[in-house]
Length: 266
Image 1 (cartoon, rainbow, N blue to C red):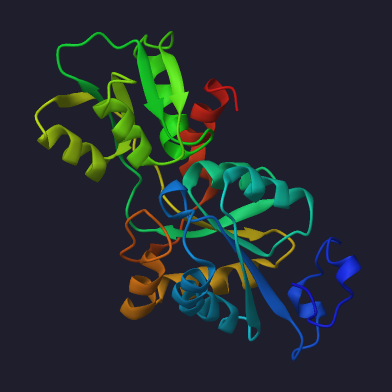
Image 2 (cartoon, rainbow, N blue to C red; image 1 turned 180 degrees about the horizontal axis):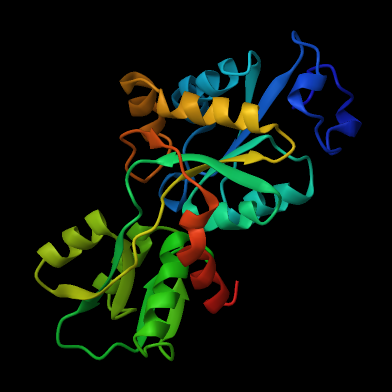
C-alpha cells in the first residue's frame, strides 16, 4: 500500500504493512495480468470491469483500491523487483512465479485450468504452436510433450490462442495447445483431433504479499469468496478464463505447475 500523497520518487520502496498506515490515506495496490486472450483490453474497459472486484477486496480492510493492468508476463514479473504490490490476480503459471517472491495464495477461481494439445489428423507432428512463453498453455504443453516423448518437436510461441489456432489452420504447425473450449471448437471443424490432454491445475489466483498479516490475507480471501454475481460477471470481462466464483486455496495446490515449470526450464 502507498499513501496517495507519497513522493513519486519513493514509490519503488517496499510497502509498509496496511495497519501501519493512516486510515484515510491507505490504498490496497492490486496488479492484474488478464492473460494473453485479454491482454489488449482497453484501459478504461479494464478499470470499469475490474473495479467491483477491487473495491470488495479493499473494503474488507477498510481502504481504497489502486489497480494496475499488466499486458505481458514479463512486465508482471518485472514488477516484483520494483514497487511491491499488495495483491496480484494472475494466471496459474504466473502465480507460481509470484509465489516464489514471498506471496501466498488466498483465493482462486472455482473452475480448474484445463487444456488440450490438438493435432491435425493423419499428420506427423514436427512443429507445435504454443501461446506466450511461461503462459499456462506453454508450460503445461511443454511438460506434457516431454512426458509423452515428444520433447524434440519444434516449438513456435504466439501471443494468443487465436494465433495458435490460425497457425494450425495454415499448417505452420501440425499441433497446438489450447484451453478446452477453444480445443473443442478446433476439433469440431473435423480436420483436427485431441492429441494429449493437459494436466488440470488451479486457474487464476489471488496472491497476497506476506507483508500483510494472516488476518488481512484471510479477510481478502473471504471477500473474494463472497463476491456477488454482478461483480463476478464484471470481472469475467477482464480475463480470458472462466469465472463462476472463488474458493480458498493453498500453496500445495500448485505443485504440478511448479514441477512443469522446472521441467520446461523456466
